[in-house]
Amino acid sequence: MAVSVGDIITAAQYNGLQSRVATIMGTGSGTDGYGQSLASSQISVTDTVTASDMDNLRTDLNKANNHQIGSNSLVANIAVGNIIGADATGADVGTLTTTDGGHNDYDTAVGVIETNKLLIDSGNSTVEAAITSSRSTNWNGTITHEFTVTFASANDRRYFFNSGGEIRFSANLSGQTGSKSDDWATLLSNMGTITFNYTETTASGTGTGSAIGNYDLTSNYEPIFTKTGSGNYAENDYIIKAKETSSSVISFEINFQDDDTGDPPITPLPKGATPGGVDEDVNGTLTSTIQQLRATGANVSVATPAYSNITTL
Image (cartoon, rainbow, N blue to C red; front, side):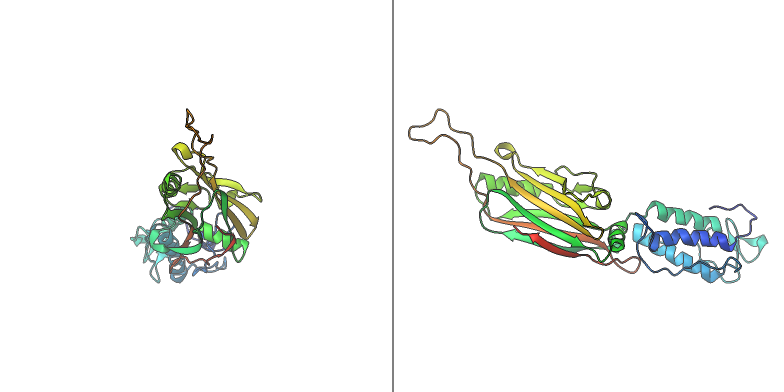
């Protein structure tokens, strides 16, 4: 909370700032909390706020800000012996010349990391391989890739998504021949990479995502993304479903649904021909690829979950 010029900055006011930073960087609850150790800590209400206390708070602020947007918080270091004012610091009350080192500057900086709490800077994250499933035998109808993502605890699951973590899906068909298989290859290529984060599922290409992310899951599978074929193969679909198996486990089911029933019958029917079209199989090598984006580095680093296939292609 901001204070007025002339006010004395108390231990309680410092503790208020530190508590807000700890909510973002520490355990927190719900969509707050990265699960990190902090340099700063609460002080006794009878203590004097020292330069060391402020330095520790600034360290935590800088880590959070760097994790979120890749830069330090815009607050000054407070030198030993300086007096902390509402809007500046200095050697004595009459010369509070450091205008970005006051209590209110720190209060503003804390507000920034609270606003940006679910952002992640690209330089503070790593895209990592998670799990795959492939098949090279021809197929028709529906085939499924189902897997689980298991976190060490419910809190670790929160930390992963609160710190900007994502689960990413892609698929490709290679070495295929024929119009149906070519359509499947195009469908999978055009959807790009599908991203599941804390609040939504989106695609870098085309397809229909949803406002369903980690915090929106139920105990039943529900569709979070669909991509449909085109032309004569508009019945075909790639569908991702997700559910919360437990507080620390998420399950995903990816269905490759080849619902095409064949080309329309030829009319008039040539002599000796059989009514109805031909529903050819899909051929080539089909691969379902899962990756993750995880907070890594010196500012915020969270544990990786374990991935396990339940049903393979």
